[in-house]
Image (tube, rainbow, N blue to C red):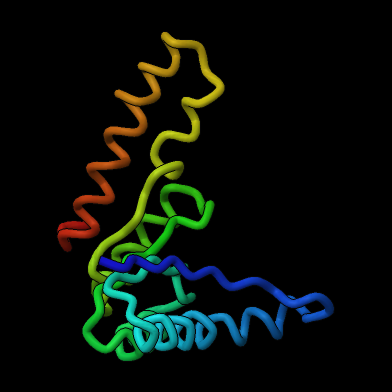
Length: 134
Protein backbone atom coordinates (compact mmCIF):
# COMPACT_ATOMS: atom_id res chain seq x y z
CA UNK A 1 0.00 0.00 0.00
CA UNK A 2 1.35 3.43 -0.94
CA UNK A 3 0.79 6.04 1.78
CA UNK A 4 1.75 9.56 0.70
CA UNK A 5 2.30 12.50 3.04
CA UNK A 6 2.14 15.90 1.38
CA UNK A 7 3.32 19.14 2.93
CA UNK A 8 3.06 22.57 1.38
CA UNK A 9 5.52 25.39 2.01
CA UNK A 10 5.44 29.11 1.51
CA UNK A 11 7.61 30.21 -1.39
CA UNK A 12 10.49 32.62 -0.87
CA UNK A 13 9.08 36.09 -1.37
CA UNK A 14 5.47 34.94 -1.18
CA UNK A 15 3.41 37.05 1.23
CA UNK A 16 1.69 35.43 4.18
CA UNK A 17 -1.64 36.54 2.73
CA UNK A 18 -0.96 35.04 -0.70
CA UNK A 19 0.16 31.75 0.84
CA UNK A 20 -2.87 31.59 3.15
CA UNK A 21 -5.15 32.23 0.17
CA UNK A 22 -3.49 29.53 -1.95
CA UNK A 23 -3.06 26.97 0.85
CA UNK A 24 -6.41 25.11 0.59
CA UNK A 25 -6.06 24.64 -3.16
CA UNK A 26 -2.41 23.57 -2.76
CA UNK A 27 -3.50 20.80 -0.39
CA UNK A 28 -6.36 19.72 -2.68
CA UNK A 29 -4.27 19.80 -5.85
CA UNK A 30 -1.47 17.93 -4.09
CA UNK A 31 -3.99 15.26 -3.13
CA UNK A 32 -5.22 15.05 -6.72
CA UNK A 33 -1.66 14.65 -8.02
CA UNK A 34 -0.74 12.01 -5.43
CA UNK A 35 -3.84 9.96 -6.25
CA UNK A 36 -3.09 10.21 -9.98
CA UNK A 37 0.38 8.85 -9.21
CA UNK A 38 -0.97 5.85 -7.29
CA UNK A 39 -1.37 6.92 -3.67
CA UNK A 40 -3.72 4.63 -1.75
CA UNK A 41 -3.85 6.68 1.48
CA UNK A 42 -3.08 10.38 1.97
CA UNK A 43 -1.65 12.17 5.02
CA UNK A 44 -2.43 15.87 4.59
CA UNK A 45 -2.28 19.19 6.34
CA UNK A 46 -5.61 20.59 7.46
CA UNK A 47 -6.79 22.59 4.42
CA UNK A 48 -7.96 25.60 6.46
CA UNK A 49 -11.75 25.08 6.53
CA UNK A 50 -14.70 22.78 5.99
CA UNK A 51 -14.79 23.91 2.37
CA UNK A 52 -11.10 23.08 2.01
CA UNK A 53 -11.78 19.61 3.42
CA UNK A 54 -14.60 19.10 0.93
CA UNK A 55 -12.25 20.10 -1.91
CA UNK A 56 -9.64 17.61 -0.68
CA UNK A 57 -12.24 14.85 -0.43
CA UNK A 58 -13.33 15.55 -4.01
CA UNK A 59 -9.73 15.68 -5.22
CA UNK A 60 -8.89 12.41 -3.43
CA UNK A 61 -11.57 10.69 -5.53
CA UNK A 62 -12.32 7.94 -3.02
CA UNK A 63 -8.80 7.56 -1.64
CA UNK A 64 -8.91 7.93 2.16
CA UNK A 65 -7.12 10.87 3.69
CA UNK A 66 -6.06 11.70 7.20
CA UNK A 67 -5.34 15.12 8.66
CA UNK A 68 -1.94 15.78 10.27
CA UNK A 69 -1.51 17.79 13.46
CA UNK A 70 1.21 19.95 11.84
CA UNK A 71 2.34 21.28 15.20
CA UNK A 72 -0.90 23.02 16.23
CA UNK A 73 -2.01 22.90 19.86
CA UNK A 74 -4.16 19.98 20.97
CA UNK A 75 -7.46 21.86 21.18
CA UNK A 76 -7.01 23.25 17.67
CA UNK A 77 -6.10 19.82 16.32
CA UNK A 78 -9.18 18.17 17.83
CA UNK A 79 -11.38 20.85 16.27
CA UNK A 80 -9.65 20.45 12.90
CA UNK A 81 -10.11 16.69 13.07
CA UNK A 82 -13.83 17.05 13.83
CA UNK A 83 -14.28 19.43 10.88
CA UNK A 84 -12.21 17.24 8.56
CA UNK A 85 -14.12 14.11 9.54
CA UNK A 86 -17.46 15.85 8.93
CA UNK A 87 -16.23 16.77 5.47
CA UNK A 88 -14.83 13.52 4.16
CA UNK A 89 -11.56 12.76 5.94
CA UNK A 90 -10.98 9.15 6.91
CA UNK A 91 -9.02 9.84 10.09
CA UNK A 92 -6.20 11.70 11.79
CA UNK A 93 -2.47 11.14 12.24
CA UNK A 94 -1.21 11.89 15.72
CA UNK A 95 2.21 11.29 17.17
CA UNK A 96 4.05 14.22 18.66
CA UNK A 97 0.69 15.94 19.13
CA UNK A 98 0.09 13.38 21.87
CA UNK A 99 3.44 12.69 23.49
CA UNK A 100 5.86 15.55 22.68
CA UNK A 101 5.49 17.10 26.16
CA UNK A 102 6.96 13.99 27.75
CA UNK A 103 10.19 13.86 25.71
CA UNK A 104 12.38 16.05 27.87
CA UNK A 105 10.79 15.13 31.20
CA UNK A 106 12.13 12.88 33.91
CA UNK A 107 10.95 9.27 33.95
CA UNK A 108 8.42 10.00 36.69
CA UNK A 109 7.09 13.10 34.97
CA UNK A 110 7.08 11.30 31.62
CA UNK A 111 4.86 8.54 33.01
CA UNK A 112 2.52 11.15 34.49
CA UNK A 113 2.37 13.10 31.20
CA UNK A 114 1.74 9.98 29.15
CA UNK A 115 -0.94 8.72 31.50
CA UNK A 116 -2.67 11.96 32.42
CA UNK A 117 -2.11 14.10 29.33
CA UNK A 118 -1.38 11.94 26.28
CA UNK A 119 -3.97 9.25 26.98
CA UNK A 120 -6.88 11.70 27.46
CA UNK A 121 -5.75 13.53 24.32
CA UNK A 122 -5.78 10.25 22.41
CA UNK A 123 -9.30 9.56 23.63
CA UNK A 124 -10.44 13.05 22.58
CA UNK A 125 -9.00 12.50 19.12
CA UNK A 126 -10.66 9.10 18.86
CA UNK A 127 -13.98 10.74 19.76
CA UNK A 128 -13.46 13.40 17.07
CA UNK A 129 -12.61 10.72 14.49
CA UNK A 130 -15.66 8.71 15.48
CA UNK A 131 -17.94 11.76 15.37
CA UNK A 132 -18.60 11.79 19.11
CA UNK A 133 -17.10 15.21 19.76
CA UNK A 134 -19.66 17.58 21.24
